[in-house]
Length: 351
Ligand SMILES: [Zn+2]
Image 1 (cartoon, helix red, strand yellow):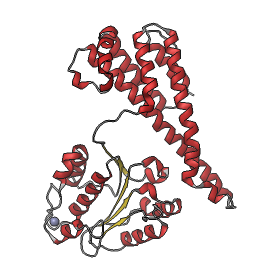
Image 2 (cartoon, rainbow, N blue to C red):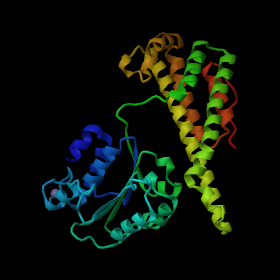
Image 3 (spheres, rainbow, N blue to C red):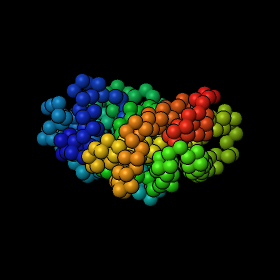
Image 4 (tube, rainbow, N blue to C red):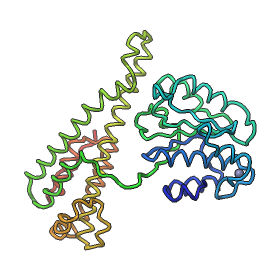
């Protein structure tokens, strides 16, 4: 195994990591995020080898020396190298406990025994119980000398905000782009809006669908965050400051989850509008992202025309930027949809 293997499935990730190694600008901590946990584990192993190998090149570890071989060993999972340690969820509870994180911390604070650098890998970091995450926070904030911390997760949004923000995030792509099934109604409405150019009714109908989706998501997210933070377990805690802090954390997590869901919807819409542009340009239909809609998109692209198709892409990009800057969400969406049906409206008010 080598970076070459990683480059087959994750070319962008492999390139980023290799560049950082070449320039000796590796971060102290990384957050590997995405659906491809196996690829993340492979990347973690390759990094551990690259920083410890006896004859490392720009391509990473050699795979032959004692360091590399111990890191590659599969038993125990994560290898046999004394300076490289993995924390996994316990098989029964599916949780990573505070005890495991304490052990990892101890290793990271020691001098390297055999290699040059200590590497701590937290596999499925979303499985950390809150106490364990909190306990580890200090090490993340001030990583010991010659240590590298790698957090691997398919659900980065489930990590404490404070943990998420400590590592340099590297996104692992899914093998194939997936279209979220929950976005179907919105995308249908968007196509109708484009088809019925100038129809205010279509714009407001779509606004209703978007609002319905977002409101339902927020209702789903709130209890999910509370369960995740296990807040009911801590009702009895008497420390007032602690409760204030936890409430802030709760609100931050609800907001982060909500923004992620909203961002996902906006990206789906943007891809559809880009598809319309591809069809308006009569470009290669392989470029169409929403393949399942290809037959309907081709005539729609011709009907909308190049100029409006380009404008619409600009509109969705603008609204995404506005939403990132805390404008009034409903108003920003309303204005955007009215512009897409060819009507102008006042610019959204920044709140
Ligand atoms: Zn080696």
